[in-house]
Amino acid sequence: MSTLTERVTATLRDIPDFPATGVVFKDITPVLADGQLFADVLGDMAQRWRGQVDVVTGIEARGFVFGAALALELGTGFVPIRKAGKLPGPTVALSYDLEYGSATIEVHDDSFHPGQRVLVVDDVLATGGTAEAACRLVEQLGATVVAFETLVELAFLHGRDRLTGRDVRTLVVVDGE
Image (cartoon, rainbow, N blue to C red; front, side):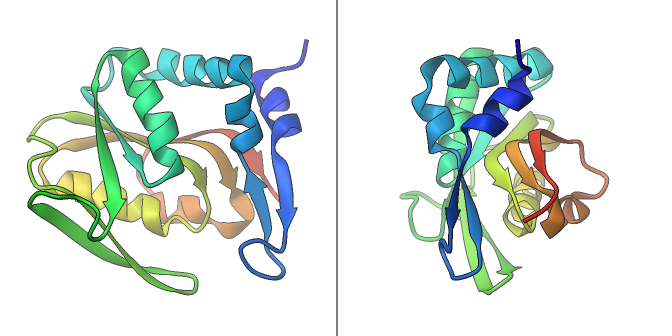
């Protein structure tokens, strides 16, 4: 019987030259399409955080898939962190630099409360800019980031370096491009 990490690694799909020439995109959709594997991934994440967090937040867009399902499994609420202009109510925003430009993410200004323990979830940790910005948004509203949880980490992009001092958990680490 193979480990969960081996099963996920075998199921990931490489898409060459997406979204740009020379980039090999790690496609997680085959993991989502395998109901048992997806359930096993969520079970693995849930056992790590059960009783440790008050709310789960997911980063747009695939972080919503993992984050919402994980929140349901943990019996907590779920808060979406979205791209600018996508949330209807008053928001708090944070802009940050990406490898090829900049971006802004937002959350409703009443999403988190002082003292809440928050798990930040996304599908892939790449350069770390979005993950770092999401953690800072949570903290800006007075909550505590318990950890950053992701399915895949692209270690060769050094995104973990932007999360120094934070608990970062990942199931699959990709060392080379």
